[in-house]
Image 1 (tube, rainbow, N blue to C red):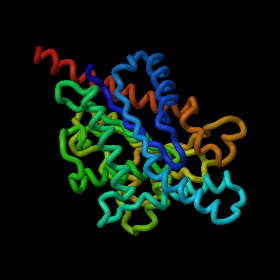
Image 2 (image 1 turned 30 degrees about the horizontal axis):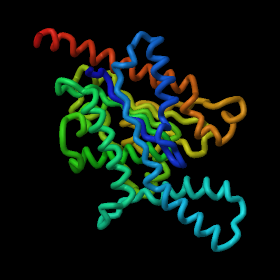
Image 3 (image 1 turned 180 degrees about the horizontal axis):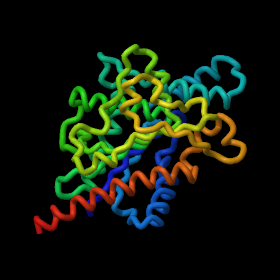
Length: 284
């Protein structure tokens, strides 16, 4: 069965299980159903990359603990996972097996699998990227590489010609942009996006003001201000976590957050389906 919208989900820092996206997908699908959109028309492609770095992090901690006494082991594990992910995700020009390339290979595999499983007829449906925390930086780098260097061969879909939605949340791109005086965003929406979908294309960056790892993107510079549709401040989490830095992990289960995602997906899916029907009727 063909789909009307494709969704790529990229997690952020920390030790994430392979099924990290399942609860959020279930919540979004439930919301889409209440909005009158059959969830089967949405194709999902979670990108799990935590294991690319997790082995080296665990090995180091085990060696360090054997070498001498370390206090606060739980907190140290959190620090190594969080800062280790960000520090290790670097492009190494003379190392094709570096973490940067291995993580990007997971995205390429997810897109190819999504296309093979759910896209029929050769017409690329609109693509939405959901990216949390460091995943926003990873998604941005991947899209940049594809757009500027043709890093991925294949169809229009895998080359991201139908990129129509970006939802970054708890995003720390600003922290990485400071390394360059001329930080440039990806081209959004995709240059090749059909005219009928362009009015629906939005890059929404969601951040909780209490989340010290999530930031607005428009203030980076004028280029980001033009590319990002909106920075949306949103309180997520419960009555306690929503008022603390623990909000960084609370987006996935926040009802207002789920509603924003479902509304973006539904608008793109319905627009694509509506525009496609006359063409299908003509072919039939």
